[in-house]
Length: 106
Image (cartoon, rainbow, N blue to C red; front, side, top):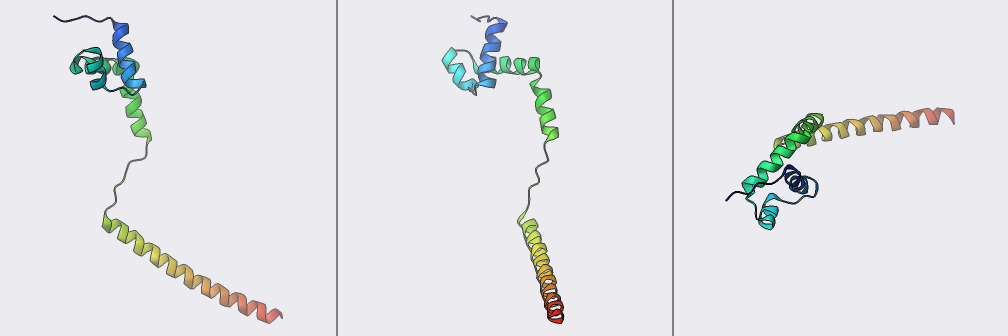
């Protein structure tokens, strides 16, 4: 025999899943209500409060995740090594120039 639950109770249980991080499986066992029924309640509640729209907007606002391959890391490493070499050369030149200018003034 199926049991009818009022809207307030369904929303209460749904909020336990959404806001208190309770799992549908856990509540299903605890309340002796099928997982399918509870999942449906949670989906209905998410639609009612606009959770899906908020979640989609949040995903759009986030930077996309870019996964790097080992080749990408090798390429970055080589580029950084080249940059370090260039900066070391420039630093060496600047040191020589500074030495030249300080010798002339003394």
